Image (cartoon, rainbow, N blue to C red):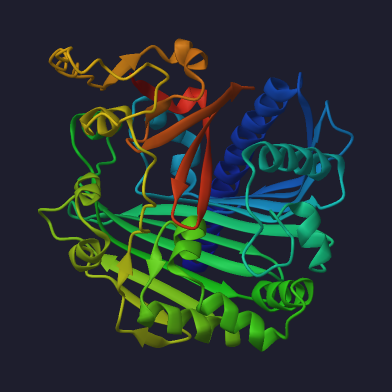
Length: 442
């Protein structure tokens, strides 16, 4: 009789677990139906199947989203969400409304396909071409007369479509430990990127996070090349009428001005050699850093590139080989055109005039003291920016960066600012919505 009781208990537990799983599936299906109804005015969403495992993992297979404005659906092989368990699926929505995050969560989007010759790609390519034309972007270094890379360029490299696998997740360490965030991104037959972050001062309670100051304590960035770099160097070498080896050498030995114009920093000897190794044999690039407890990311802006390397305890390796020389320097700025202030500080120049020479008997009057002309940056409303074309402006962005130079144009929601550097000119396209404040040199 004992075995019958055990069998009955097992069947009861299995039935209960199955019932809970079915109810959790019903809850998830209701949420998906609500999502489909919410986006119905702009897009249609369909999927082939939905399943929920006893461990709380949700799987949605063969997802299709068809925007109403485009005759091109977005398709995914599947979506998978790993949760803490069935109990979270049953009660998690209430916890989230109360501002409480689960201890761990991960979402994976598998096989998101993007056609390179579809309507969406063609529309984006037209926008890229328009922006490059208006900004006067110089040709890409060592790639013939190619001025920019768009989706059409990927087609010329031999890609018919881009297929993405993306996984995003986090986990709170027990005992008040740090939050570990992970992002894995793969573009099939192109490259794999992994980002790992360790964040201190982050709590499952959203209210506590609003009052606290989360900070990054460590990070890791890994890129694994699959075929992109080999395709790129062959394509650019042919476009520049070089051999592949000549292309690599030309890339590595670029002038400081060329590096500064395109990368914003000038590589030192160690990083140039590492770049050569990667171009010769594309493999893995790994960058790791660890911040001390008394240093936060915003303060890093106050240090020079060489000091930042030290503060971050940075470690870099290429194809498994450590790079010991991580020296970087900022680009050298070209001599600026004389400003009104510098012109005013010079002694007045003598000019030939048509006035007759003074009479020998006349005593020339004393020269008048030069009038001091000063210039300064003055704040102006962003809405008045278009009234200061051809003036020197200083634009402060919402991300706390600053762009300074001659204002060329304000149109189509963009301000274009030209800055002269040694060896060329850089034109910055700045979205007006990203401008915090503006100063004009008067």
